[in-house]
Length: 117
Picture 1: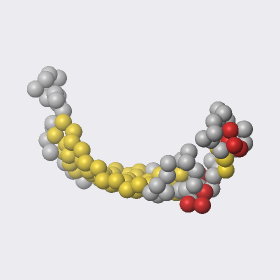
Picture 2: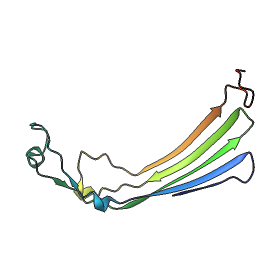
Picture 3: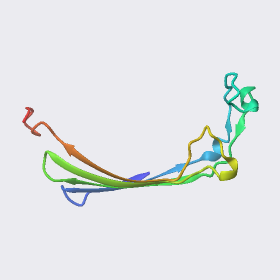
């Protein structure tokens, strides 16, 4: 779910969150090809059981419209680790992730006129 707030024509603020229901995905039912690098149980068709925690992720961002051509953007996100250390599985790359983002948007056409600048 998310919410965006635009107090004026220049600024937009947004906040989002997502719920990941890992409880519904407790097993990996994949049969791997014959390989010594894969666990014997997985190689022979047995499922791998996961013990992941359900998790909320959070995101926030801003957009500043400098003029009709130029927009500046920034944001932050957090996605928590869901895999406990005792249940490590190399098929899942899982770490808590934090990020700061920045961006620029530029319109190469003159808005409303339909031709190149």
